[in-house]
Image (cartoon, rainbow, N blue to C red; front, top):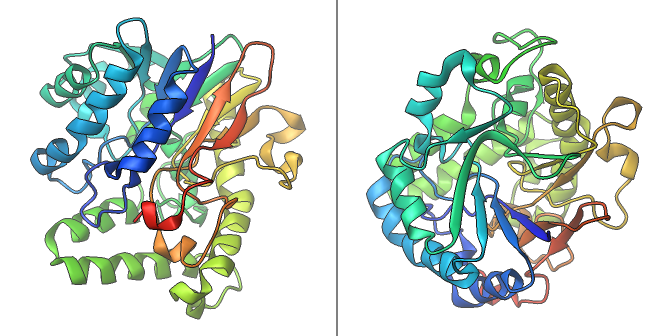
Length: 341
């Protein structure tokens, strides 16, 4: 079974960085679906953290309908919510409590919003799992937001959290990660983006980038202007390898996930790519090996004047084929930047 894994569409984001609302990126994704048997939507597919589910679903509906129609009744979609679309399963997760496993099957009507999303993906067959899903006997997929519990601040980028919050220990279960405390830049950023006027929201997003950069050791904060986007993306990539990947390996170890490969999203950095050090994409002792799906956002602070191949370029995916290691793909690398924003 050929499986395409994608994540981080963030459909409906107020600042309109979501590239699948444009015709060419959407057609690229749909064309790719002709060559696979299964599509895995690995979290943050719809932008629900900003608290505007009505307008978000209006924008997301045509994209989700197109995906479901392209796969058709013979195609399969596996949906694994992340932190930005956790509202789809939040109440169900609370009800599950300690019964929540590594690959729990979620009823498609666990919430009205989830039922709506599943209906939009028809006629494809849809399964919902949380917080992860076994894609084969050796490959486990998860959005990856549990790694935030080992970072400060809680965001896509950060440094080791240290002693803040209640950190899950060895032998932890998913509920330990769901209930762990600590600061959350991600939620605060979404709240401010929701309520501020658009120009101020864009300025606040830039400020959030500044906070993220401030978490990087020995990195001056004046590296955030758009003209410095190439250097900023390199620095954030370094921080990801030094913090986010080790944090994910820690999550996998503490949950007891016995996988050879872990495919995740969340950090928006496609990989491993040619030129990446494969040892950086492995846990201690070489296990597990990790692959990231990238994102489908055009983020100016990372991409201004950039050109593919680029680790933060929108259109990332991971392809899983029988008998082969998962591999990262840039599905939009051939598109002109003008088609993306």
